[in-house]
Image: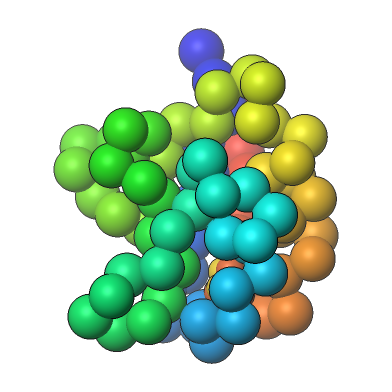
Length: 76
Ligand code: SF4
């Protein structure tokens, strides 16, 4: 089972850093300009939560560390 990732979309300021780092997992929501999980990896259709594939986990952790507002949480 992969790690769970949650994005606090209220806190996200749409800087795009996580998307630049892991475009295979994060994308910008074109309506509100905030980060969300790409459809393929969403859990329960919720754009704010997803399951990280092992091959992207390290990059997703780096994105979580690099988020300027700490909006990305990774639970293993
Ligand atoms: Fe939002 Fe953080 Fe991603 Fe920037 S790095 S787009 S603030 S979740």
